[in-house]
Length: 236
Ligand code: ADP
Ligand code: ADP
Image 1 (cartoon, rainbow, N blue to C red):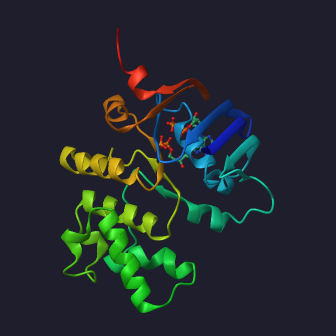
Image 2: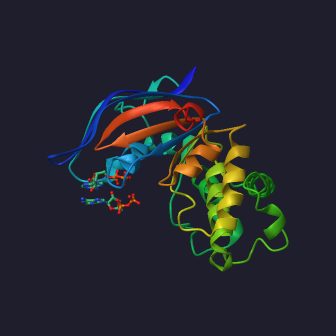
């Protein structure tokens, strides 16, 4: 079954229509790459999946976005619970100016988990899940901002994992990173597919070809192609 179902989705920033009649379904435990030229609506589309666009003034959204068969734009939906289920990782690693531990424990504390040993356990599992544990386990009290860019991005992934989402949205998560850190994150994303559904914006076609199962190609706010990545990138 599809975990994400988008039907007849339109999005307007004031007068400007940024998404035009988008229809797509995303399967559980898959990686979907959103590609297309700058300004075509990739980030806008990504952000409709956890209502990040709600915060922007003059945004109008029409159509339906269902996650686990639940209409996420329904008035009764708690945005906090939605964002717990649909985590997000941004282009620039954005750890808080706090310790490594506090960064991962942050969302857990918001959701009321106070028990110290449970926090320790989830922080460890999340850092392991983000392939960062071995590099930081000796001192979790170190400031997160002292880590390298690639480590900071994996920390942000650990922070997203900590609250047990089903879906992780990634907006160009490697474009601020060097090639080695990028390769590590790509390997990690492939690993995460076992437990999560991943939707990733990338401007890098090779990256889409390397890691994604499905590729959605946007142009001028329209979804003009949505196919198996293998098919899309194979030439007769
Ligand atoms: P992409 O991620 O493909 O580069 P975006 O989704 O960021 O594209 O942008 C799609 C279009 O919507 C662009 O024309 C952009 O300028 C416009 N846009 C994006 N965010 C806003 C906003 N907050 N307010 C007004 N227009 C916006
Ligand atoms: P990216 O393509 O990497 O998402 P952008 O430069 O398109 O980055 O957008 C950066 C931020 O500026 C986003 O939060 C986006 O919503 C906002 N933005 C983009 N285009 C516009 C616009 N035309 N008017 C207002 N805000 C915009």
